[in-house]
Length: 124
Image 1: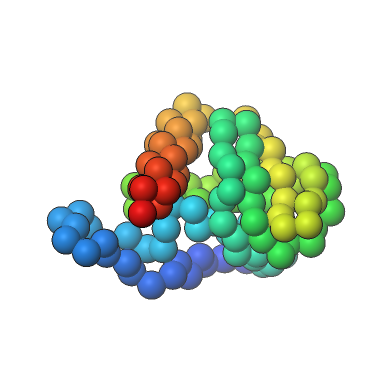
Image 2: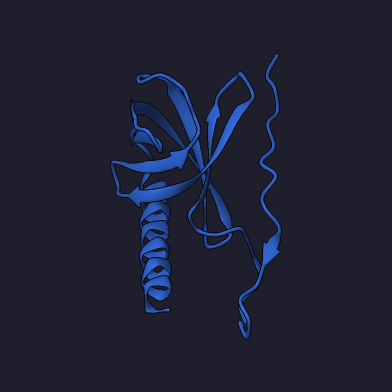
């Protein structure tokens, strides 16, 4: 029997003076999910590229564990199959499994969103 998992995103947030639709959480918000077990570990994307990402989290899964990484880009969910490569003191290194072109494009959009967000935060 398959279990249904639901990602309860953080509160809606809208930037002051923004005319865009409100988004849930930030572009850096992520969930590491252990498929079939219902275990979820929240975190923040610290670094992202087309091959994988570094996530700041308290996840204590072992290297080699198959996981799903739940991200959000342009307000839409993005779920990627991945493998936990290495644990660090503050987080985990994740390697993405091969994905369709559409997901690769969404991942690149998210990478640009994160870069833009970090640049804006650095300006303040």
